[in-house]
Length: 616
Image (cartoon, rainbow, N blue to C red; front, side, top):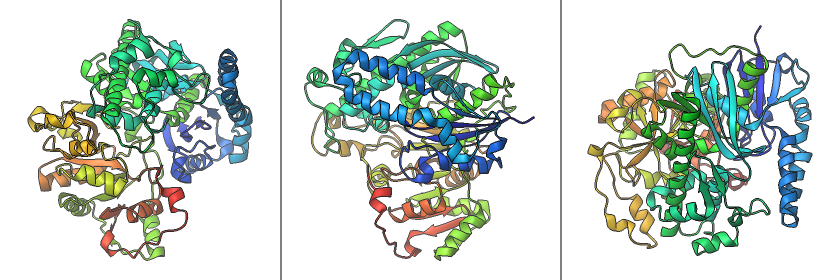
């Protein structure tokens, strides 16, 4: 009989739900996409409803509902840690108590209220946090056996774990426990550089190539002790998260000779160098732990999950160093992916069901296009109700040619096609696209479309069959989780004097300096965060890039998420249209429909715009 399992993550950040049937991933989505509240931590009622509807499953027909975390073990950590810290941890204890005792212990009741049933088991199951991460990495991977690394801030007690998977079984046999954490170290530096913890880490990663790792030695001498086997310990004298409500403390400021950067203030040379330094240390840590996992397991393949697994610079280093023959990273590597991992874990461990690898040798997450899709009839109804001017182009090849021509002319396109992506990356279903050949595309997209910091890099989407024409990479990178060097023959020299000053316009001058014949996607260190596009994953997106190549000779587009700063990625046609009209995009593609900006009626802002779509 079919086994239908609903996985849930909630109450920390990035709440999500996932539905698994007979080991097959039917649907998965983050709650933020429906509520329009970025990193929404609330119980994922909307995401659950979507998953059940997508799977045509009634709540009472579920064989199990599983939560991705064990609140009582987290409570044990909080109590022990706060007792050890004493009086300074009083506020932290009160906050944690409100969260855990007030919400997290009552998951059963939330499930009952949200869907009216706990399924056939009559109760909610709970997985360990890092086992959920491990399952999310191993089971969708294309490997029958693999070493497993999970790396994040903290889940219950664990922050880093090493294990292995074989066929349908997973074992985690080594771990590093709180308060020692790669994720919390990286978050501490994120906070120190003026970005928001749990959402700004990718900004720090994007800033790192502009600097030099001049503080790496100081970080390793004072903040973290890295052992020969890849394990590590933090020097807690410099951090405030154990006994207070801050990531760092005064001693940390004194170590680096200045207080933390204020959010939204000018980014200085010191901030760039701090970013480069923590990135270098993080990459060294990940490589060290991976080498240890290879020695311990003897496995040829590696899978990764946890928030640190979203660090595509470290991932790229893992691939280039060939610590393992191949690796696979869960595209929803953070807490959202815990919902999927928990469901898969119950299917294979609790119900002892066998695992079926994809016969084509690829992963079973199929591009991570697991969210809602909107058919032509639904989109037409949305357009007609509001009388928006639109051109319907039903022929897929003609549509691809028209959109490609617009992109080749330097225009910016909002691309809404098929099922929404699961995870933090837009992969061609909810994307903003541009011409990678143009030197001004990066600053234009950042300042006039995304409304975000000018230094933020953009990723290339490249035809999978052409990746070797542009990047030092072979094979696939479908989830935009690997950084690879741009081929040397495509590079352009960079003025070295740009890296020696600290003027107000220094960063913008570096950003605007062409670095290759694909300047919009080439970072200052000649790297790029690559997405390979396979026709089996998203035929429409592959067709568009192929049409662009037919016009320009280049099979690469800029691909960035369809949102503006502070807003979740768009989910519905309405979300897409609102974002389109409030930015300087030129064309919106809604499935078969093309909507030109200059033909749309004047858009009237409502009072809730800044609250819902404003800046963070």
